[in-house]
View 1 (spheres, rainbow, N blue to C red):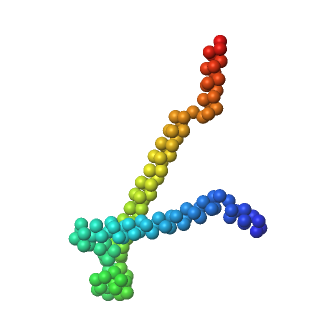
View 2: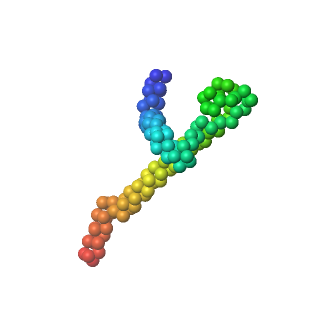
View 3: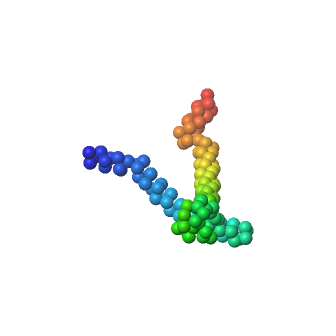
Length: 137
């Protein structure tokens, strides 16, 4: 059983997955910082200093606070501003990943076109041999 686990753990797919998860977590922190430190302040400045994460709708008459943290202490609230912020973060992450994948596909296509443009060495040699045989006749 230990040998089977070792074989499973050392397979390329498992290692690739682990690397992908680690890089994905690091990329998530970068995007989180990009959204929180770059986009949201600009969006707040454009909208007159609005902070979406603090918007909420009280679901109880006991809630009288003006900040989300205090309102949650008083009772049930619908934190739609926080949801809007998270949805915006998701949209930015999705757009960033789309751009990365699109760029990678573009580079892959260019690489394939280069490979197709240059015939393999065997094909070149066979073509030369064919041409030499034609000249001899």
